[in-house]
Image 1 (cartoon, rainbow, N blue to C red):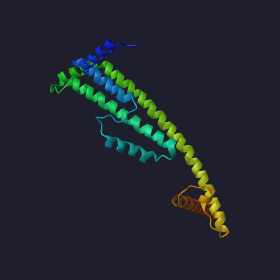
Image 2 (cartoon, rainbow, N blue to C red; image 1 turned 120 degrees about the vertical axis):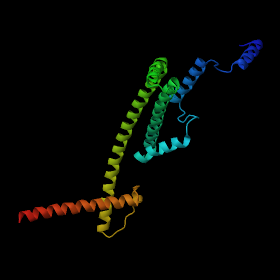
Image 3 (tube, rainbow, N blue to C red; image 1 turned 30 degrees about the vertical axis):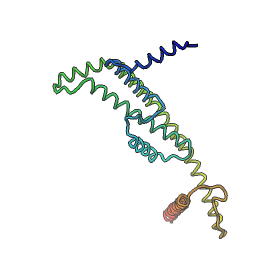
Image 4 (cartoon, helix red, strand yellow; image 1 turned 180 degrees about the vertical axis):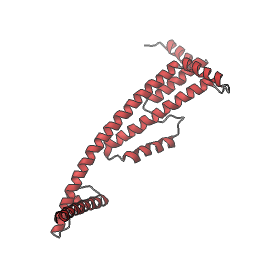
Length: 217
């Protein structure tokens, strides 16, 4: 257990610690913050635009139109991985831009880029590592989401076809039918689209049969 004197000494020392003071120390501290931003749970960093992230997330939701909690989770993971990948690209650009500066001489600028690549090799390697990890994560998540949606859509199509069969059976007897009474959760628009699709299929079959009959005459 720490003695009262030791506690007081530690408290006094902490008052003198104000973080890194040298350029190298501040640079390392900034890299630590960036590393946390790439691997931590916080997706949108304080310096980033929350509205831009929300627009980014909406673009993924509009593309994949998730149904249910699992699909929504995978779409969120996709958007987050993509957001972090964009951050990696921006960090690489900023890191080299800061190291190179604004040298108007093309030759001198090229030499500055080479020097920057050498001096920032460790930081760039770390960014490359994070980029590869995030790319693999993105690809795995896309595959999982597509597989899940393929299975779900096949199940939905089967259920919808079954529902159309039931509706047609009731219509043939002149009775009304409430799909929700048997647990069907399709919207009226989905049901109408399925009935129209069934009607088109029958018309196509009739047209094909008519062509065969005409050819046989």
